[in-house]
Image 1: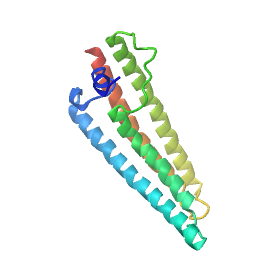
Image 2 (image 1 turned 45 degrees about the vertical axis):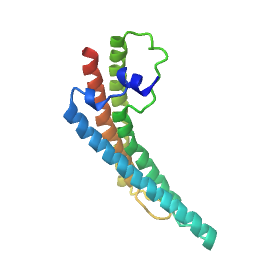
Image 3 (image 1 turned 120 degrees about the vertical axis):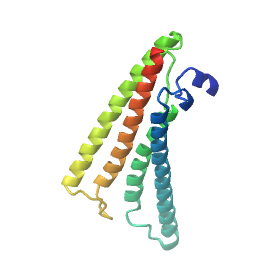
Image 4 (image 1 turned 180 degrees about the horizontal axis):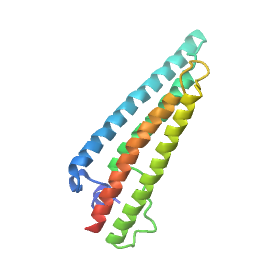
Length: 180
């Protein structure tokens, strides 16, 4: 399926066809900002890893706690990239069983599944927030650098909340399109 066919099929939520263009633009900007911040975090992870490898090779002493930084940063970066993927319709779409349904049936099923997706993401955001609170309450820290664990949970929870907002919007948009 070409990109043009994909867009015309309604699976990719093109901004021009949104019944809520201002809300879509605001969420696109929020998701883009989150993804750009995630890109900066990834550059930090690359820098720390490169510096640690070079220091280990040249001085026989890698950076202490490099893996702690990289793990926390990567988890947060992944969560911050997911909202933009949602807004751009870039998540995996399996339509093998629904190809032969009428367009209205596909649109209705798409709206329903997007609502389910938003609900699942809401649960993920909630559990990350609870986990982060528990880490903060217990004062848990990484072994070498003593970075509070809750920082990683908080970053990922923020990404999930943004993703939940985007997923709920996409579900609303799909439901509106399905009724037309």
